Length: 65
Image: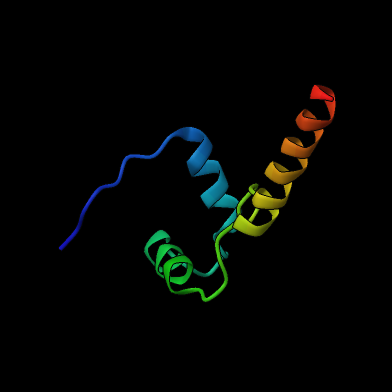
């Protein structure tokens, strides 16, 4: 069975960069969803994002003093 998935041009470009020359888009997506590491294409992982939020909160608190 075949299914179409609509993605933005930006998402398609990111997928193109991740896709290996010898794999189909189906194989790419299968690899990404089965990968044990979190997918962080141009994004922070949850721990880095939490640390950034904490730093922002501390910075805002310092201006309230």
